[in-house]
Length: 467
Image (cartoon, rainbow, N blue to C red; front, side, top):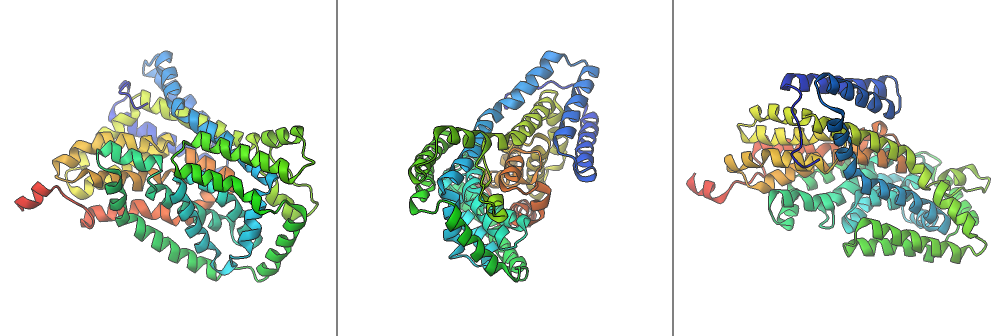
């Protein structure tokens, strides 16, 4: 989809009208009818194909658009299946229950939300992957928060905020490497420049989580935590060796081993630990866990609801949604609708503030329309790079805006790759956690604000010298 293979079947006005119609259709189904997003996305694909035929686009062109749209999602889909497998295996091996029990001994409900934010931020920075952070430590934190009587949407917001802080600030992150590569600047120059928006967003998020967490703790949360901790110790595998798989995963991630082999190592080590700590487990039982997830049958409702998780089948809802979203995005791109919208924005970028706002809004718009994190960086980056040069702005400003409005906005879109994944893994709909993903909401706001105020905006040295 990055190649310039688009055809212009629509005028700018037609492209805008069609886009508003598609967004209205999706919004009506998801918000008003509370329908799963699959249905409106499928209807949008039908509509685009019909309109494409009316505009004399041949089927081969549209078919190629769908193929090009889905292609970038093939590896993420494989990663989804591996993470579904990993969660099921880590439940069976005692990895997640052990993390919960150890966590209960050090975390209080009164400061749980800010602690969840900080822990997720540290883990995310270490491994450079927001999705892996959410699928590992995030799953354990969600379970702990539920037992403490904390709103799951708040916990999900804290986990996602911390995970995406880590994703932005880690030199191991693929998006953190993509943005400076596109802007042709040094990676660590980019990370330092991100501090202007990332640190304030994190600090504000921390304060907000302290505020909403301190006055909303269930009065019997301590008793509930102790009761569940004892139940886990009696009915689940709790052993220090169960922490070997996540430690191995973090080490491999820090060594910059790619995601797929890293997750495979986490799965295989979890399987080995499961057979070691539970000698009665059979190969057939493990195969069922990999396919359908781990099923807890203790008879204790709280324990069973926490531990019955994972499996490849648990990811099929997400996989089908990603397939539909990327197919729609491929059609939008191939038919030239995205390019027409980008052309319309160029009229408003004559000043520094407007340029940065337009870059940010374009990244947000591509996240909403295409649901794809990488293209929300690549397309605006290619479209606006020359304008940053014309206005005498260093390209590290553009790289920061692309991260602030591209990387961290993706989890806020219900049909995006990150939004679908996170809602499935954490068990909280995107619409529910969206108001509490403070870090992800604040970054684009701050980056636009800095663009208009000039704070943290660097200009080329030759321009400074001439002033």
